[in-house]
Image 1 (tube, rainbow, N blue to C red):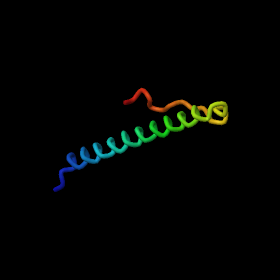
Image 2 (cartoon, one colour):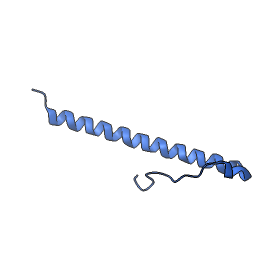
Image 3 (cartoon, rainbow, N blue to C red):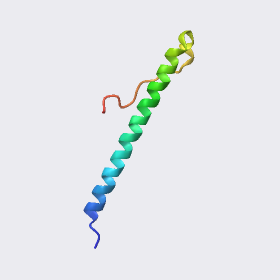
Image 4 (cartoon, one colour):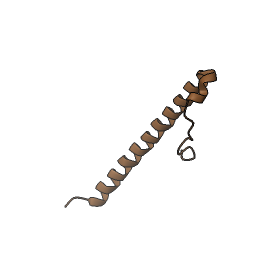
Length: 58
């Protein structure tokens, strides 16, 4: 009989790792977006403002 607890915990850990990776990629993308807006100088009004998500969860 399969060890369902072990399988579940392994799945949970893998999913948690993927979520952390996605959060990191999202944050890096938001930072690149904000940096590109700053580089444009006077045209920063063309960049749509938004708040960083999950910035408190690291």
